[in-house]
Amino acid sequence: MPAPIPASSDGAASPESVTQESVTQEAVTHDAGRPTSESAGTAGVEVLSAVFQVRRPTPDVEPQLCVLLWRQHDDEPFALPGGEVAGDESLSETARRQLADTMDIRKVAHLEQLSVFSAPHRTPGRRTIASTYLGLVPTDAPARLPDTAAWEPVDSLGVLAHDHADIIAAARRRLAGKLSYTNIAFALAPSRFPMSELSEIYCAALGYPVDTTNLLRILSRRGVVVATGTVGKTGRSGGRPPALYAFADNELRVTDEFATLKPPP
Figure (cartoon, rainbow, N blue to C red):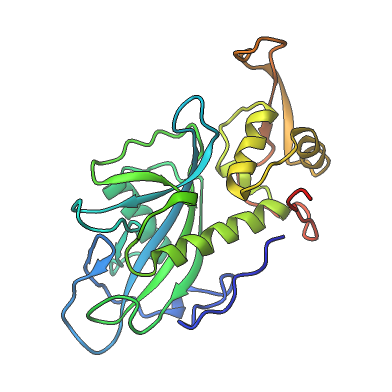
């Protein structure tokens, strides 16, 4: 299992212990990841979401783990989607609203609170605390983005706004860890899939090759995936149509609390 997220100098809270009461829910206006409030005093709060989807840029390129980013102007760095906390919303409700209203991302299969980033000068101007979320979108989900947004490969990101690169790195570590001991891949996979496609999703998310046969053996033993009794389309190289599988559950559950998926030697 990947190493736990190290404690940082900004005093980020433990990912599993952060609650809505951890931060004061004060609204702060947001423009491409930058708070614009001029007021001083008590810190403001923003919600930022690191949303991942495994995408294949072209048919001849291996699938890649991509993160949803946006910017209002071409001369600005990309930023994570987010913004102010509405007075009548929970933090998770705010995250889902922002993704639906501004990014047109309405099928987030999994959303969980990641951590709190609270370095005093993480953004210019008024001090702003970020409550961050990890979101996952399946490969077959419609993802029509506004012109200001894009899915960018996590392994080749350029300069990002503020501490957003740190947030994305923390989100990927969380995802990689949970791929070892939970069924969280259901939120990245289509409803039905050949095991070769699922192993590509694991490979993209983990960053190293995953053997398809071993993955099927492990996930079948844990009751994570089940055979559907149907077959998919034959690949370009011909051969027998592949058997299709599906996840047994579409909600997060621990499948083996002591399990570890390790990179090949």
